[in-house]
Image (tube, rainbow, N blue to C red; front, side):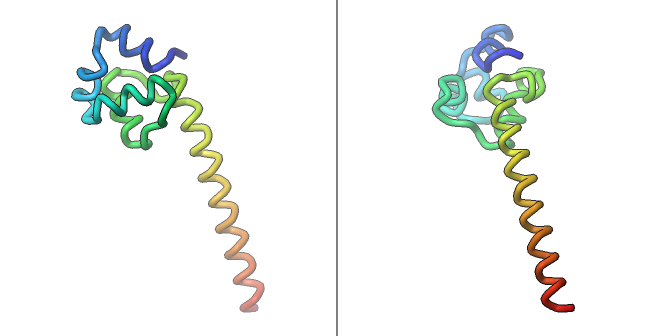
Length: 91
């Protein structure tokens, strides 16, 4: 696993070039590299596609994806619990 900056430099790209190739702002790339902001999931995928790597291979993105999956899992569990409560109340 390497940092976003390491992958970008390895591919001989500037932040501006990566931003253009990924269809995101160079500021998005810069903020992600500096740890100031985690891009939206769609932007993460676009950046990784432009670099030819998987999100799990980029240090900054692997953590963001893990947190996103935990939040999603938690939301699904909450939804299931609410459905069960509703079913009990009706029946």
